[in-house]
Image (cartoon, rainbow, N blue to C red; front, top):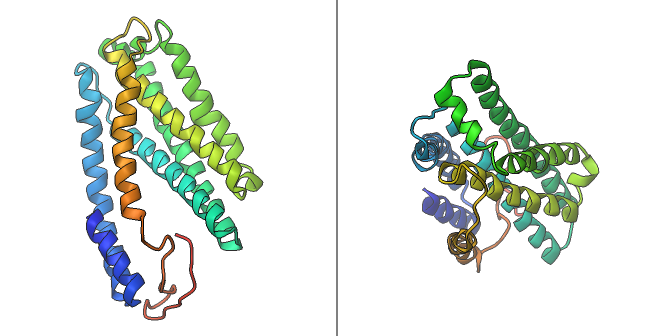
Length: 251
């Protein structure tokens, strides 16, 4: 699906045919449904199954909210690099503001899911459920959880309430980098206590695997981006979809 979206987007840039915009919207609608299903079960299979005695019906949505935060942070960093190269305009500023609003929304969604899961398990106080949080509150893991509360929710939430910050590329990009770091810490906090509940365990392979896997995806991303217009051409106007314009408009 990503290959088709990329192919049709380039075809629209090349020809200006409005039909490609319709195809992109329709395929994206189907893709969102498939993504919600596949990402949910991926979260169950990859992470929640590490402790099979524990379960949570909201875990998949929490996993998806974290992915959305990482994706938006990467988009902000990429847009910042483009704006620096091509010059800041009012369209760029509006794009940063919009992405900042999306980022704020998903920061709140992630926190809502995380707190809801904790509150339900805490109030039920069932041993096979509570043990999951017990493992993450011992031997230094509690400090990691407190780090996530501060840097994954509280600080980004209050900073993103500022309209001025969201319209300044450098500040918003710095916050996006912070959220990406918090996402790595969150995944570490979700995974490692299943193997080392007695306390924090660090290994050099933790960093190597992050660089290797993340670096591989980054390389693919750069290869897909290189040699292509960073901004859409012939973007259809809102309305009947038949009118077009050649003005460059940020994604």
